[in-house]
Image (tube, rainbow, N blue to C red; front, side, top):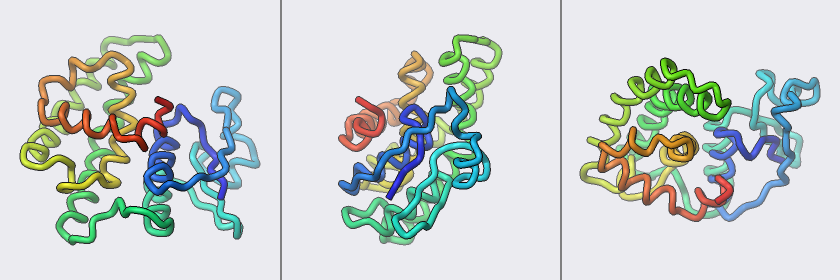
Length: 202
């Protein structure tokens, strides 16, 4: 299989984490975002929205959207499952993937992109911090009595949150997360996982 992505991309990193958890390698095809290679006709044929990543199997099957790719790889590759068998734990995993997508990542990326680009618009950064408060409160409460978001095991929920948390800390936002002690302890567990280190280039 081929993974078309960029190592700096949060969504590519989700897929790389799943591959690492499964002990599987895909042929990595780097899409240079700075050169806008994601907007070429060749890549649009793989991903109609012109972003990364996209996955191509040896039989010609192509799919896009990182969360869908992560679920597909977890279901089809051998290795430990990142999807709980217990229905309630499965529901919690999907719930928190939804929290990440709907309430957390967009707010986090407001901060990350301001820092990454060097524009440092403090109004946008403040909006991002304010927007993250409620999801961080919800995560902190959920993690009060369990090590991971869906229970006792690392799941696709952690996979989906990890790239955004990684960038927040890399961009100097530790103090934003620090008041949420359960989140901090959880992130210590997640960030030190070998698959996460590998996917994030650490």
